[in-house]
Length: 119
Length: 116
Image 1 (tube, rainbow over the protein chains, first blue to last red):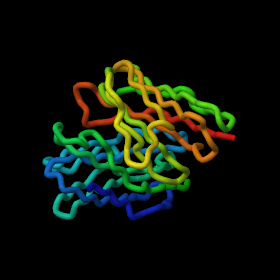
Image 2 (image 1 turned 60 degrees about the horizontal axis):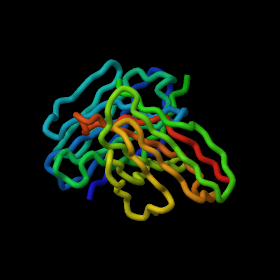
Image 3 (image 1 turned 45 degrees about the vertical axis):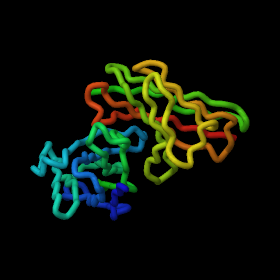
């Protein structure tokens, strides 16, 4: 069974601080996808990134960066120089990547981390 | 990017009535759509997977007769909450994945259901 753990329930930072959101996952699949989604107060989930299990290169997109370490089954998300607009709930998720699998495309979500950025 | 809409965004109904929620992929064809339920300050719980032209696959513990799902076209899936009760009050979110790229799901804005 797949499982995603986001141990940090809530994080509070002051604007311009860097913040890292942790994500640890469990899966028996050899190929899988990892995702991060942002859910602002409006409720709509915003897709941030998808990472294939074969691609361990870290990725940077503006103030966002992701650190994927297969050895520790972690896929952490860092926001540099945080802003008030970053305040949201962030979800890490996992899905099976094999198209023939019965769970293909189904997402397993972590519990989410509530990030509050104070001015 | 891919756009998914939901209608209505918010609905209040009386106990015992049925409520239909629509999920549409606006700029792409979605072979598969997913329906989630989210309680306040909790994560998303997958209710069912909906494939165009076939019966939905429900997750364990989700009542098929309670939550009717229809996926009649490549751009539309509907969730009907039948004989709604106050415990059905929740935030319902749909997602859709491209026909040619099922790996990533794009989410609708969600529907807040309040059953009185």
